[in-house]
Image (cartoon, rainbow, N blue to C red; front, side, top):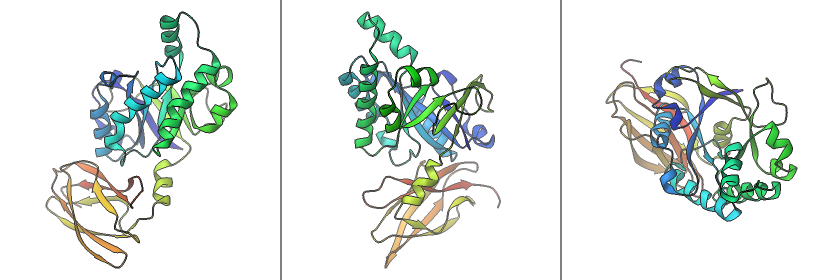
Length: 295
């Protein structure tokens, strides 16, 4: 199992270096809610940049207030607007979060409870829209909604992120939210805790056409230069997720091999994921580079 957390603006400013040091491997970050760009989560940028800078794998979730399938499609459009700048860096799913607050909002607006058919239609409208852009997708739900709101076809069509605090998951899921009262260094107050039974990042790397001669975590001294070799039948891209840590320059191509000079330009203690992509591929994290004062 892979250890993770899910966070939003309600968790305040987060010290991601401490979160990383505490052994958290991934973070599911709220990108926003509703169908307007003004509802982007106020901490989204700080959270995703901080998590990526310290080598965590990331996914995102969108809290739904949709009242129709068309409205859910609008939410998907706004979600894409928020997260597209990080498309090459997000390896965990884009999750649709439809729960009690979503139903309460519908009742307030419509004066009635949404039908199960409508709930499933809205869920499919959002997640299928994300699938068309090749995003990994997941449905966040709990046992109540899994049994009483979502039909088997909906549950089978997406990875399930299940809120189940009773121990092992009571229904099949890919990610389990195991509690809401966790304590993690770097986060003030309680935080939602998760485990993933699927290594999305490793799976993504396994599927890439780009081979690389340096993986895992790699330390560099300030000012140091290192050369990375990639192998691919077409010229790939290689880049750092976080600006100001390393500078990457393409050196030369020899057959199917490309050589890249990496310059450590960041301060001691900074770090970044390094991603590759063959033409038509999403970016895949291949290694983490940390700038250190000694090796």
